[in-house]
Length: 369
Image (cartoon, rainbow, N blue to C red; front, side):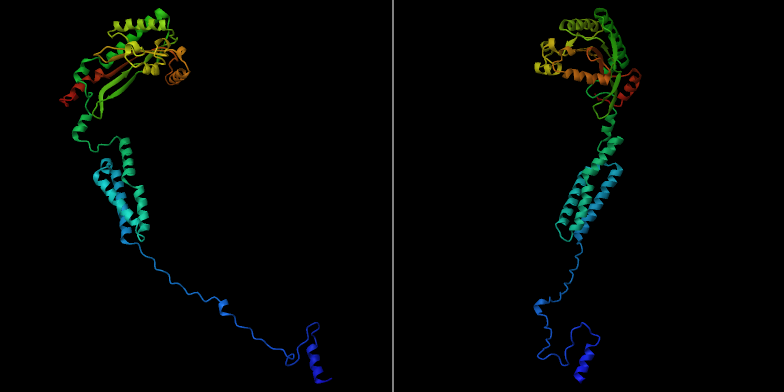
């Protein structure tokens, strides 16, 4: 075996199935090509790092706006705690509010101050004269402690025992609370007896007596009260034009016997002087024959007693609206839906037990009336 054949056998041994090994020196005419370098255009140039811009610190305007807003908020809260409602709405505080708002707005227009300006704006929106002043007003109103801009004379006038525009001597000379109450009860008893005898009506008490303090006209309460009696109502309807006239005529006789003036009709357009359209609105019609409500009145002037006699008649309810109104009222007071009702009201009356104190206090108010 030649040398070439021995070398070929050595290459082929143990290489079953593999492609033949090229001869020494390679195949004739074969050239080895070096890999071409990549084109410059195909390779991206290395990125040049961009230097970070340094953050600009907030300028002095932003800090000033925030400091002023916080300081103003603390001032408002301190005034609120102290109960100075009048101070909150004073010229000084309102002027300071404008200064704060102006500074905050200026900060918002400055790029370097905008962030702190926005924070200052939030503080200003949460704590300003309007919001804190409203809180203070509610606080002082609930506590009854608003003394604000009241002078010593105004505080003194608030305790005036009488009523502005009313001569205190008239108050002392008229019926007392106890006298009005006693006369009312006697008047009611006599009217009930008369109408029961003539028409067979039975009666039910309506509501309770009410005493309401009268304002004195100087910002306080007087020692006088408005008296509203417990009422009385018939348990039967009072219907028909003729029957209503008869009932009111009998009541008129009784009230005159008790020293009151003759009854006066609010619902009758011929004698009341009220515009017929208003009468129709109040009483369902401008004709007493078709009205659902009759309202009669009298008094014992110059004494304070005022007497009312009302008749409610559902048979003249045209559209059901009056029935609904009466049902709502009956649900509140327990009174009958229809029929006759009696009540007495007296304004500016003084209790007998308060008379001495009233006269003593009046001495502190010479010239008041």
